[in-house]
Structure formats: C-alpha cells, structure tokens
Length: 526
Image 1: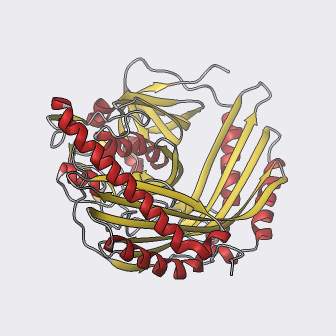
Image 2 (image 1 turned 120 degrees about the horizontal axis):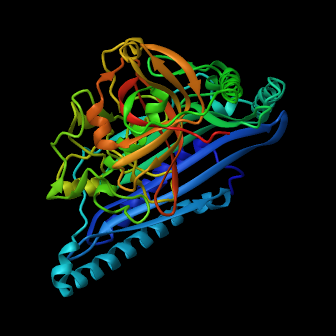
C-alpha cells in the first residue's frame, strides 16, 4: 500500500528497515571500512504577509536519504549518494537504501583504485594523495526527543497565516515613513536517523520555529533604511506567541519584535550618516553585533575543511593555518580576554546531541586567553590531524554530503558590566545590531555594518548614526580587546551558506558586549 503522506512517525518503520539492509549489505562486501545511512524527515507549515496582505501559506514535507561508504583494497576512499524521496517511494524504501549503498560502494572502490594508481604513477605529486580513514568514536544507540511546549504540527495553518497577516497589517499603519514590510513565519519538525555498520543507531527529533521581519522606511528627504532580522529556536509555536526569555535568549514575541525593528528603521531615517575615522578608535559592540562577528572571524576560519583546503575553491581558506609547518596553533592571536568556542550542547539553532556521522557532540575551544587552540572537525579530518573528533560534520538535509559546520560558535562571557565598559570610554562609538559582513577570503580582515551606531563622549551615549560599521585587521582587532561583558546572549542564524553546491544551514552565534579598537566606517550622505 502506498503512503499518502510523509509523517514524522514514518521513522519508526524506516529505521529498522535501514538497519537490516545495512547489515546485509556489509556482510556481502569486502574492503569496507565503514558504511552508514542518514534519513531526514521534515514536516511543517509556514505563511507570509506583505504590507498587510497575505502572500502565501502552505504545508510541506521532505524525505531524504544519504549513504556513505569508505572502502578500498590497497587504499581507502569515500563514496557518497543522496536522493530526495516522496510518498510513492516508501513501499520500496528498503530497495532504495540497498541501491544507494551499492552506488556509494561502487564509487568508493572506483575512487580508491584510481587513487592508488595515481599515487604510484605521479611520483612526488602522488604524496598529496592518501588513504581515507576515520577516527574512532564511541558507538551509540540513542533516541533524543524534541523540546517544545506547543507541538508545531498541532498548530492550524490558519493560525500561522492569521498571525503573519495581523502583524503585517499593524506595521502598515505604524508610521507613514514605513513603506514596505514583510513577515514570514515557519514552524516544523525534523527527525534525523543515523545508522552505521559500526552499530550506531541514532534517532534525533527537533522542533524549529522561526519568524522574520523585513522593513523599509523612507524619510520625506529620501533617506532609506532597509532592515531585517530573525527570531527562532528549537522549540514549538510558543516562540512566536510568547517570545523567548531565559539564560541565553532575550526575544519578545514576533509582533513586538517586528514593531521594534520597524520603529528603529523609522527613527534611523532622521539620523545623520555615520562618520568615518582614519585611525582605529575605541568601539563597543553589543551581543547582537558580536554574533555576526564571531561567525565570520572565528567560526568559519576554524572549520577544519577550510583549513585543509577542502573548501578553498568556494568558501575560502583560513589565516590561522597555512600548512602543518606554518600555522598559529598554540600561538597568541588576541589579548588574554579573547575566548571563543563552539558548543552543540547550548540551546538554539546550533544544538544537537550527535552530528551526522554519529559523533557525540561536545564543546571545542578555538581561542583560550588569546591563544589559538583548536578547530571544528569531522571523523575524516580528525584522522588527518590526529586529534579527537568533536562532532561538527553536518548537512543541511538528508540528501547532501555533510560539511564541517558551526554549531553554537560564540565568544565566552567576561566579568565586566556593559554599562561600565561604556563609562570607561572618553570618546568612541557603540555599535548595536548587525547588518552586513564583508570578509577577506582567509578571514584575516573584515568589515561589518551595524543597525545603529551611537557616539560615546565622556562615558555617555549620545548621537545616534545610521549606515555605520567597523573594519579592522582581525589579528589587530583581537589584540586590542580590553573589556568583555557578562551579558552573554545567543542568536539564531538561519542562513549560513557554505559549500558547492550551496548548503544553507541554521546555527547559533553569540557572545557578550566587547570593547576593542577598529576604524569606524560610514554610509553615504543621503
């Protein structure tokens, strides 16, 4: 009988089927180092409204399968296969898994054979080829349930549609300067299944709820302010209705969140453009701004596939590591107040218990007291670097090859009160909220714009500017950090792009208020 729809509960059937197929497959194949399969089931709904008019709503689902085999005779290589499926595929799922594993195995064996041939024939160049291996990890069988108060699939689509419509309608009449608004809402459930020839069997379910507000304000004089922002969490519909307020998050409900953003945009149309400075000046950056900063100048350059030049063609390299003989591991890259890590155990978009090859997720320190100490890795890259796997091999869906991705990558909180950090500034600037990054290919320098920039004079916040930001050499910036606040916050990042073809991933970033030195950058005089 053909399934009429894809449901989260379908995993109860597909997991044992996949485990059985995997056992039979590996029993009859030689040269296999590991074979594994991932199944991703997603079910949810969403709606949007623009300028007080509903623009779209609907339910959606996905069923995706990905298989990997590392195999070979004289050398090992990896073979991958991924596919998106639908309800009509469910009755034949076991055969589809078997076929996917076969394709992965054939690709692995073919690559291993050709790799050995070229390594033998290419002389010195052949030394750049090596047998693919993976580091050992504890093998787990575990089920990890979702956390929520209101199960996303119990929320009527009409409630999602009405919420987006009502918020957009209220924004439309908020201020005559507000010319455009767009509200988007989504709430869904994902179930990730992972099984391996090593005996792993991981079943993780996640709730996701997200709201987005986009606004455009224009003054009578033609000054335009375009802003957008997201709230979101691995929780249920309560995120939209009630907001989030706990140790790590401070979000109002989506209505208030959208109104606050719109009011900021309107006020900013009356503000002067931010000035430029020729030399670095004291800059205090708030947690929201630092979420994007840590993402760009700590997170990406500490992903080990970039460091090993596996992502160079598209995502870039890392200034922290040129080669095994020339790198900054164990060396000072910032002041003693700079501390940063990635931690999947923290809540939010970057949370998970196991990554997509069954590695138990754990905190990995990148910078400790200004010293570079470690990178995010996978089992394959961990084997190359001969360090411990830390569970950061993630894909944006079940049909694509995972990449090394950030989980919750953050600056650690300090001990200073944010108000005191500002009071100690004779003359400088306070940057609130992030907007747009512009980052060097190897992340050795950056420019990031802020939503609002305030001038600080004699320790007091004064004039607010629009269209401003900072730019700096990353090393010089880190070395100049002289105050770190105790107001740690996490923020959802729903659109981190990496890979070729592009994978867009949800993750978390954050940190506390920080003070350092950078050049102030301004906007156009319009």
